[in-house]
Amino acid sequence: MAEPEHDSRALAGELRAGQRVAAGATVLTVVLAAGKGLIGHARGSPALTADAVHSVADTVAILASWIGLKLAERPPTKRFPFGLYRAETLAALVVAVSILAAGGHLLVDSLAMLVGREQPLHHSLDVLAAALISAAVSLGIYLVERRAGARLGSESLLANADESRVDILTSLAVFVGAGASYAGVRHVEATVTLALTAMILWLGLQHGRTALMSLLDASPDPSLEKQVAGIAAQVPGVRGIAQLRLRQAGLFWFGIIGIQINRSLDIARGHEVTHAVVDAVRRAVPRIESLTVHVEPFAPAAYKVLAPVNDAALESRISEHFGRAPAFALATVTDQRVVSVEFVDNPARRLPARAGLQAVKTLLQRHTVDAALARRMGEIAYHTLRDLYVDIYQAPDAPLTQALEDFAGGRLALLAGPTHSSEAEGAAPDSAAESV
Image 1 (cartoon, one colour):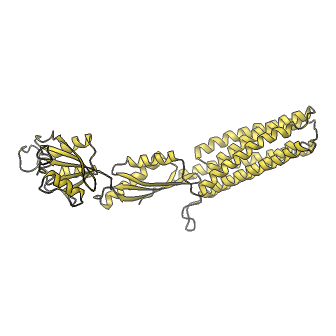
Image 2 (cartoon, one colour):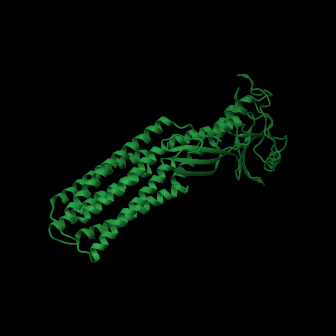
Image 3 (tube, helix red, strand yellow):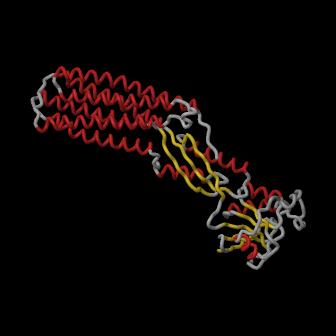
């Protein structure tokens, strides 16, 4: 099992940047709400007054986002060993509730004006000016929040950005309604607001669902899981992916992955593989703050088995020498039977030295191999196969068919090490010992 170390300074900088954006948006929204509320009340504009209430809801939402980012910055403690990353997600849920509350308020007011309550007319240019200024400021807040939220991957900042986009439309709707009132036309303001209310409520439901799914550890986008699994599967030594679970907490992702490695790997090499998986995944997906790796033995449905033979025939015996065998058998073997066998010539058999090394390189460039059978094997060939994560089994002095059947039945033992040292450079090719 392995977990990465996180760059706390980089995280702190990102969180502080999000806090500054949220704090600045809070101040601007408070000023807007106060200005629109005062002008709307003084001039008798129900739409501008309702928009001020909407801005107050925005203030609560943005403040919740700022608090969430501030809490997420705190390091893990004994009481909260996994940190407070979910505080930001909880803040996103508050944002969604605020959007729904504001949408409900606008819905009630617009319906009331449409079905019976007379809307007073007002003829004040400062109501129109307030609506336009509100739209312009909301546009600026939207652009800043959207850019910062995308950079930081912040749920609440992105939610606030969408709410600011709604504020632009709401303020423009107020401008249209106030303009109609200025011109002596009733109910236009209520009609436009009713249309915008549907979009406000839809956004609130969308953001609420996203935050709630995150709090409930729902599975993320399948494309992200596929990406992480693909990266892990490419790490040398990983023979398969057994399981993968990801969950989101605020700005970051946490995951548990099960990888399959060869049974012959010792603890030290298995540990190296797990750390390589963590490093590879986090380089490609920096938002994964923690990845726990579980190791399981590699057990494919069918093994690709390599065996040196004296002749390209099923009746041939396993060759005594690996690198100087006349040919190799490449067999597909399940735990029940031998499925298929093909033969390839050994192009390295007549090399003056290091024949086993060259044979291994040539064969593994062209074929996938899970396990190799050998009666005798020099140290260079042995360690080369091990470095390429190929398990090596002690083969009997027997025909190929029997050796493969013994492998399929689990009756062969792993070769604990090379059977002899490699020859010196320049050894004769017909030497009794293998030249690897």
